[in-house]
Image (cartoon, rainbow, N blue to C red):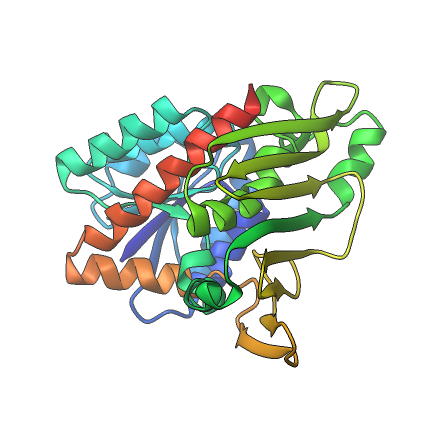
Length: 318
């Protein structure tokens, strides 16, 4: 997989760092805005990439077969569309797009052209989700799900001072729902599919951004409560509760160290451990292997899941 990356923010730097050591991945180019050229050149020097400030020229680079998009949320759709139209495979950060219609269009374009189109999220490629899915029947009828991913940081500190970064700018589709709760939604939808009903309640800042909020997804016989915040912190976890026991992750689902299970009348047991933590390596490796095999079936299967999440996300955003 010969990768060109778009952007120079923290997530792009993480992607480059984790992709650099993988045998099946080579880093070929980076595209940044003119005003970010110095930062782009620094990354290009570290990883031996060519640097571009023109996206069209970047897409014409024959050495690049896959484009990684690590831009603000509102830029995912136009940049992914441009790459697919140029015949490039695409790895796009979460959320895939801003609207479900945009995501459906890109998915159709990828299928029509036989291209790979991945949403960059770790969950399906680590050990925890498969282990939780396999153990779920042991819990009996599922009655409740709780997911918490709450964290503060520099972006919120700057926000309070009036300096609004894209992650807290509604005009950039920022806020806790799109940037943090998206992880919880991926987990719940992976296990239970699209809900029968849903609602979203949020705390909103001075510019209307949802600085924290709780989504409630209703299923037949159970409900899932997904809380995420950028304005406060908590002990983060995901918990699935059934009539015969529960499963809990130690940490947010994006980087949990392990999942444990406790059945009624029994001791708590480790269900699975995740030594990679929040590393992007497993997902990048999986993408490279799929591309090498030329098998789009796993990619398109996960794309259907991403589209389900997008429909849920859009409904919660209303």
